[in-house]
Structures are given as C-alpha cells and as structure tokens.
Length: 225
Image (cartoon, rainbow, N blue to C red; front, side, top):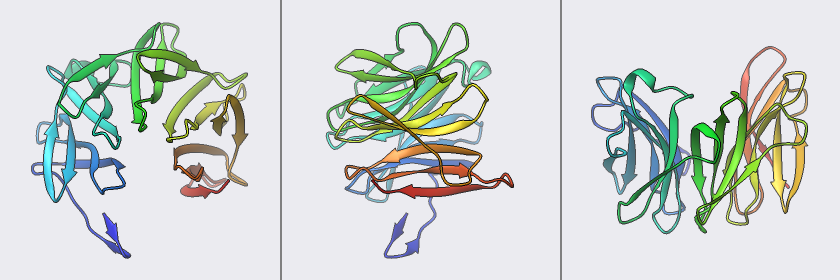
C-alpha cells in the first residue's frame, strides 16, 4: 500500500507469492496469493486483517475486483493438474458470501476482471477454436467484445460509466490497447511502443496500463482523456 508517498509491503499469512488485484475507494484490497503448497487462493485485506476466499471445491481461486456494494469478481480452476489459462471459470461472490459461477456462451474457459458499481463484469473467454474474446456480463446477460478485425481481444477493466478498456491483437500479431465507450472502439498505443495494454480506467476516464518498448522493457503508463 502507499499513503502520502510511503510504501508498505504486505503478504497474507503463509503466502509464498502475493498479487494485489484491486483496491476500493475505502482502501479494501483484493487479490490472490500462493500458499505453501503452491495453491492460488483469493484474499481480502481490510483494516489490516486478511480474509482468505476460496471458490467452493476449487483447486485455485483469484479475486480481481470489488465494487462498493461488496460484490467481488474473479476466476477459479477445478483441478490442480488443470489450473491454467485454458481451464478457468469466472465467478462473482455477493457481500453475503453467495458464489455464482459462469462462462459466456460458447466458452471453454473464462476469466472475470473487475465488477463495477452496477454489477457489470468484464473479462475474457476462449472459444472451442482457441480464439480469445472479451465479454461483458450484466444482469446475467452476455455480450461478446471483439475489436474490429482483431485476431484476439481481452477486456481488462471497466468503470462506473460503462467504459471498457483492454487489449487486442491485430493480423500482424501486434498488441494494441483499446477503449470502448458508448459503443465506439478507439485503438491507441503508447508512442514508440511495440505493444500496449490498457489495464484500468477510473470514473474520470483516465487509463492506466503497460507498454513494451523497442528494447523489450515493460513500463507503466497513464493516459488522460
């Protein structure tokens, strides 16, 4: 965590690797950690106290989002031997602790990203042909998100206004960032980058992400409207 320029490292008890996935305006953090057996487990850090969150019966769990009502989103796998990007399933969990598993129609695997204040979840799924698509789930209904002409699309984050950001791959194999706002796609790249990925967008439309430079180095970026 960082407060007034001061960094604080944290790890859930027994963690061998920790990834913080989301922080709410109230400072509640969710993410995932690997335990001593190498199993991925979701966590909540609130008021300095950790709570582990495991999807019931899952072999691995990751939390990716938390909205103001306390609803969380993430993904899980069902077998340790099969816990990879091709065997994941999306889920939400309510403030009351009710888990809901889901995959978009036609998906063989899916990943849920953040859930916004209205309960809209964005993420990505792989179809039976191995093609990656973005998706939006709202009130139980799905919409596929494919950047026009792309060979793959990943919807990584959304904001309260319903704007969606992510990345897509063009026919030449180059990765570009995109913004989907009011039904209109906008492609963008960090100047001079060989690959750009938009990973988050706030209520003001400010986008953050990562880009790869010509030397292969990875850097963070901020894009203002």
